Length: 179
Image 1 (cartoon, rainbow, N blue to C red):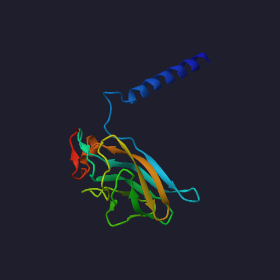
Image 2: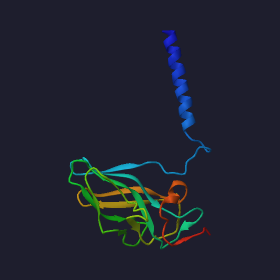
Image 3: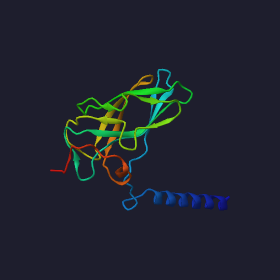
Image 4: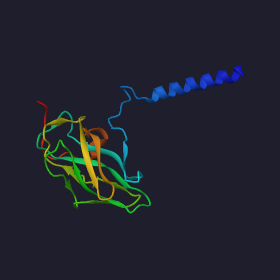
């Protein structure tokens, strides 16, 4: 009995050390944002659309996204498996004055398939007319409207174009160095 308790204490202590080593700290810090998954519930409360890794891409540091600038939105949308599929029909943000550009005017979401907003040469969704200048790391709220699932709001980060995000097509013209 005492021998078993000893091994439990050793196992718990070792597990804590391993987890502490995985926490990153300043030297192990990654420049990527965390994975975020959100679901849009239907009236039946079954998630109809999953939204993964939704971000607004900002400029390369230390520049800021200037007032009036446009900004691409990246992420993945997945309509519920076994359902009829869905369509993204609109995206808006209170921090952007213009009408959001959606390539093809709508984005079809076949049931159970992940649809990336990244075309390889840019985003399928571009927010227009930033109301006031912002640095990467700031947050904005996006309102996504789906044909079947309805509307949902999600707070997303304006991610600086660095690290992994450097491979994404940049924010369009309208960036300026900080004052």
